[in-house]
Length: 608
Image 1 (cartoon, rainbow, N blue to C red):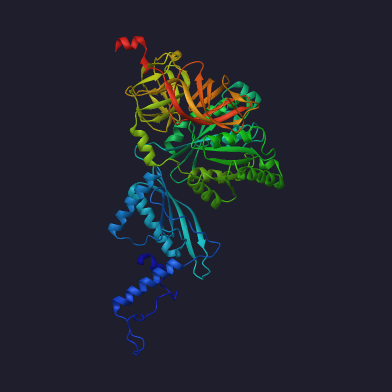
Image 2: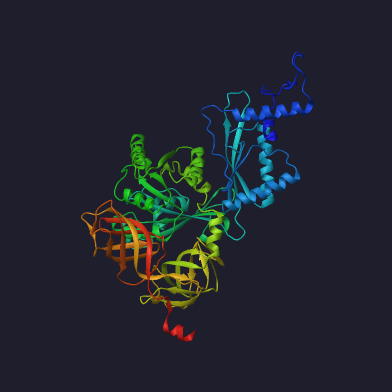
């Protein structure tokens, strides 16, 4: 404490006099001078009391107290540390980088309790130089995000600095975040992604989105009907890496230390099942809801917002096409969104981003608190405020920490099959997400369940992430796996590829505790709905509603569902989302009714 208190030991007049009054002076002898030890002790107490009672001006907030875990570190100052202290700080930096899975944020000039003390210019520069040396020692890169003046109503200028430290973990090629892009049809989702990933502004007629479309009818109608993936990279200095300077995705992966993978989803209501599948199966870290400034909240906007919240995906909002509207229209759209976000069902705290400082603060608060919802207003034609969104993407940290990641990697391998392709000269290829464990080239897995509940053996050929080669796949990462000559007709979306040692639970019937969000009449036994559970999407029949004969909108119950086509691999605790026309509901799997333990196909059984 006394090292930090020395900041306040120059001319403040709080316990820094040349003499200390002895507390044990004899009566009648006047003021006695304390011994040297007592004087030092009293000075320390006075300084400690001063720091404890020191309050900044009303307009300077406290930061939350420093947490032991997480990737944010507070440092008052880093001036001339000893060798032992330097080694300790380097170890501490490694810990923070590990907690942030390759990213850490240092707040310089801030006490551990979160008080914004600030540093003199010379001390700040020295502290930043020390931080550079620490980063070099651990093999990381450093970027000063912002410097701010701290106003304590004094003549001496004090500053705090916010610094981003980034180091790609040794076992990874780059840091990876997945962002699902939601919003009503014609709100400008694909155009915005085209501008971000291609590095050129739109011409006002959707030129940049053409590179994102996968089908002829999408180009003809201008409407996304399938799920497409686009990538945006950032190098160690926080600079954008996209197709404007790189010809291939492989080049972007080589040059980038952080990758944002955008999952472009459909906005039209008739493609809703595709949008839900993208949200449930691809496990996005965040969702970006795009709202057109000139139309406001319209069409499927509320529905998409509700879906993201039901699946507990943190969401931020981008208001596009501000170049088409007056300031009053944009302001009206912002107010409309704020009202919706503050409603009891949402309970969000909207945060309008209008400067770089706002973008930095929004990225950190958004990751720390699920209730904070940043709102960006931008244009894909004029480029207005696009840089703020890029700053936000550069700083935003992953949600899961290293401990959760390690726990998942210790489990047996489980890969969810979301896409199936046939590639010339490669053979059958599956795309999806590794839910747990580690997957390597040459690994032997089993895939299923088939219509009869069987699993088939297969061997992993090669692995690709973001269109570039990869030898090892870790839990939480999305990739495509080449399966060689494996028969494509044996595969379907919703299957899983698991370790042969695993005993997967296959079931036709399962129980779920549900909430009926909306239904025109009553929900009862015999009703058929489309059920979404992770990468599983299948029609199921309501076999029983426990405790009630029927359900109405807003009511809760435990319901028994039965799949109508084939058995599925499910887990207790998985989120359930079901729909049929205007009928919608959410819930959680509470109990499985497994069929007999999974079997290999007869031919493979004989061979074994």
